[in-house]
Length: 274
Image 1 (cartoon, rainbow, N blue to C red):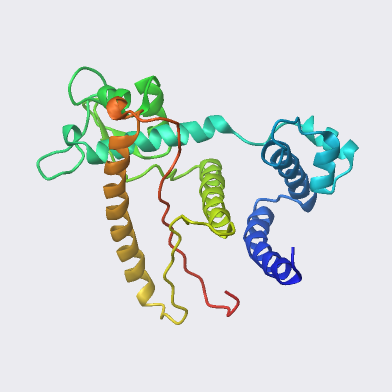
Image 2: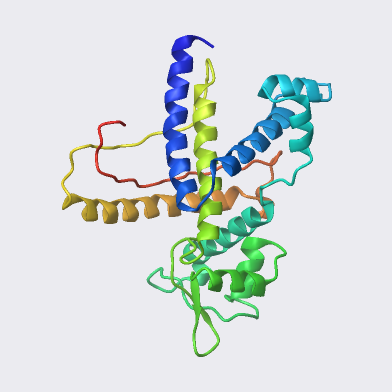
């Protein structure tokens, strides 16, 4: 690595770490805990993504790649993984159910608005929606999850009504932090892909920003960004649903891939350091 690239990488990492450290201090996470998490990730990535094809990754090679001692590598490998794949799966399934409720004509009224659904039965019911969008997960489990995060509410007649346009936990900080991990990791993976030398097919990665906006413009921008972004995401969701074999079993094709589009809004006082 050249000195120029090292300086540029270091500056980029400092910006990313600044945001993570701000969150860590807010939640009372000490440097010691943060460093331990970092060690676990270094070892995990070195073992699973930087091996030599056809050869088992050795402790010595992991130690060389990470700069940790062999003893420390063994200790970290024996620790409990901090990742929670179950929560990630729950997030994906709940999000697909909401997307289907917003897009599929069976669950919309004449104005294209999502209708309240009976929990069980044939036809346009919550049970049908869950079976169609979330596979073999029991409908009541999905209902309980959507109630928990404030995405739906129960009517007096027993039906459930959708009150949000996405799976955005309104109350649980734990769920929001788990979404943070998923979304930020996808963004960094896209940037990493685009940084590869001679990348013939870079992934789409754009943003638009100005640094001298008045306070009065921000509420209007927030609303405009939310409306336009939601419209685009709904259009993309309709296309993805036609090609995803969980929601469209007849789609066919080979392999199993995850792909999507993420949109985020940001604002902060300009400090002249961006």
